[in-house]
Length: 93
Image 1: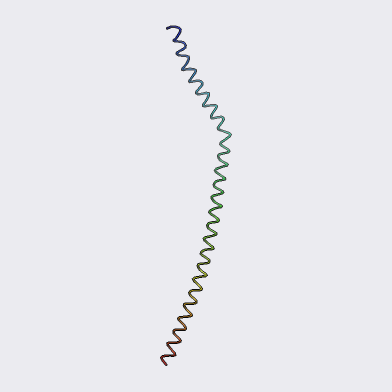
Image 2: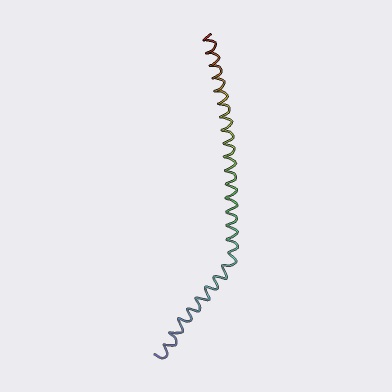
């Protein structure tokens, strides 16, 4: 048993050391990719803002067309009301 005990204690220590070395290696390897992730996030935000801008411009154009339609309908209804009022006035006299 005296020959197994040093090996049994050395194995967990080596595993612990290898594990911590692996974590440091992974962390140092992840640092250069952090700039890539930030670039992708910034690019995604820019694309979202571009899409949002296009949507807002389309909604503004839609509202403008709706207001033109409402103005045309209002003038047509007002013309019909004036014509009906003139007809009523002519028929009453």
